[in-house]
Amino acid sequence: MAFGRAFKRMLAMIFIEDIPLKMVCLILAVLFWFYIDGELTDEREVAVRITAADVRLPQGMGVQAERDLPEVTVKVRGPRRRMQYFSSRDIQVNLQDALPAPVRGPQQMFLRRQYFSAEGVVVVSVAPTEFTLRLTKTVRRTLPVQVTTAGSVPPGYRLAEALAEPREVSVESREDIEAAEKIWTEPISVRDRTEPFEVLAPLAGIVQAGDREVPVVCGEQVVVTLKIVREETQRVLEGVTVSAFVPPGASMVIEPPTINVLVRGPQEDVAPLSNTDIRAYVEWPSDWRLQGPIGKTFEPRAVQVKVFPPPRLKVSGEADPALPTVKIQGRLVKSGSGG
Image (cartoon, rainbow, N blue to C red; front, side, top):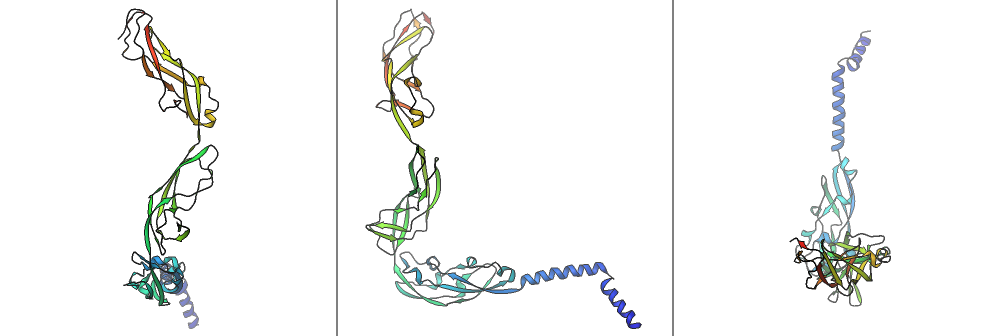
């Protein structure tokens, strides 16, 4: 009986008494479990491809063959939770100190774990620890950029201009590129485009050097601005009447009374035009004062015609950007007293 009572007492102490304190202990135990689980370390091996950019060679020197650059296995250690999502993209490579004095020809490169780093983890080892790299002299030149487009703009539009900024870039090659004249952008599609636009364009990895296509390296990108405009047509309209804007009490004679003009604009706007759709006019000169008897005349003079062009159209002289001139002569038809 005494044992039974003691056993019941023990169960009461474990499951019934001091419930708030037991809840606090349970919560703390769960928190500690999550913390310890997160801090438990794990190891992982990832494959990292070495690139020429990682070697950071001096100007005028490059890797003879990209295939000489190995894929290395990097072992890292870190929190288990961090390791779950870790990949080769998280590793930074800096091999600048691996070749303190690079020269042309075969080079023995030794890899140390200090050349590899990643946030929140420790690099444990790298394999292989050495490999042979062949270096060669490179040629660097500055070439103008030629924009390459793909596709066609819709009917009624045209590609008026394609400009790259910067207009020149520096390229590097392991072969002679003295005969190269330019470097192209990768093709930029203008299909279905009707408005000007800008795009960040990579450069092609080859240049034309005489009859050879030579691979080059250029880390730059250029901003290309493509100007797409409506395709314009032009047409001469003959016999456009020139109107006279005269003040009350005056009249004006215009010689010749009609002119020919050149109209430019979109095809759909120019085609249906007639000579009555263009409003041409001349104005009464400001120095012809409206003072004097009826019949007073003013010396003839040449003035340039002005026009009210229809929307989206440009109007000019038939063979000259300027509008034609006509000769005008003014006359008072009633006695005036204005200034």
